[in-house]
Length: 243
Length: 239
Image 1 (cartoon, each protein chain N blue to C red):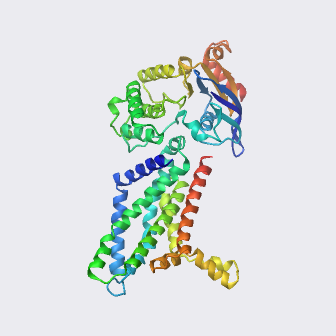
Image 2: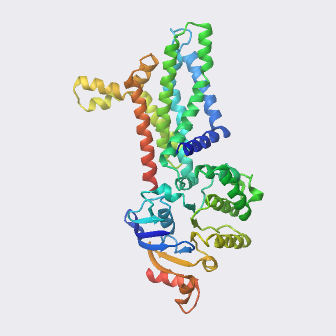
Image 3: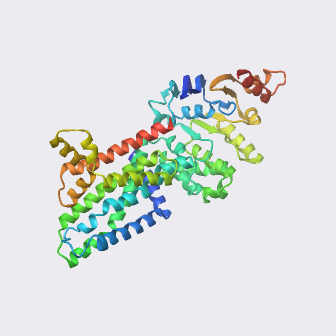
């Protein structure tokens, strides 16, 4: 199973880098991240020991870019008819799903690695809180994993990469900007429970908690669960669609 | 051996495959015949476990495909009707990718590849991108991928579509030879192919199995003594 998973991972990673997709995503990511860090986030004007001006905008940048990474993973297989080939090979569906997801997540890791010079630059010229920066990168990694899983799920029920991108953008943007307080309020729960639930379902609050150094279990679990639920839905969607 | 018992597949209210029963032994080349929409492709997808039956069962060498799908797929080589190749890969890359997914060792792959490339005359295009190939070469690339692991069961949906007469002739001979100690199931509309290759014909109409016989017996069913007429009369009668 692991060997076959590695084959899928390798194939998807190679197809990212052999085409223009990975290079466009990486270029746009680095440009958008540097622009927001220096020109919107006030890099020089705020207390930036934890690179807050960089991490603050990551949910929005990733919401735009990650659907572009995941859009073709399943949609193109369906569009080209290769899905039938893939699903009639002696390979567990879970290996295909995880292999594709890991390939997308690996590209996100490359995106984050590109920003490493910024961390080095901070260490050379400014006073930095490296532990805080580390937690910021951890938050970005968890967030990108969750968005990749959401994107994979969306791609699994679309027949066109463009449609998959649009739906992916809507959902990831929605997750990034919406705190779901209205939804929780509509449940008419007792105030303490309402506050607790609002915090649990709010992606931004978990993300910003981690980048401010609170690497707590509930914050990490939120992203892990979002990833696992999305991958399970991805599996269910493939099974449902083919039958 | 393939055993199909009371197999049904419904899409909403449409019965794509309706209570089909048959058994295929080693050494048989079976042609699946039927008009468009008769359920041939659905039946093939059920045999490969790609889709699940509404009821009934498919057993591949005594294993239930639903319960032991991966073990069954190890024994099956399947070529869908069309468009299942990765156009951005070369023929060699596609075959290598298929071999890796199937868990073939490097020695097994290079040994089988050499033989298949020679038999299917793919040598001239082995390093060519699939998107640049003619329909015939694409078809043969698909068949080569299905044959890489030397499967006990070969399921082919319209295998000679897009091939020129010479290619058809050599592929038929190759498959006939391959099917001597294996099971081959071919879905086709070409009656000359049925006569040239098959030991047995399974005729489907509206999802039902309406005839399971040899090509010779099928011909003798009507005074015209040809398969096309028999096909026409049986499928129109059933309507």
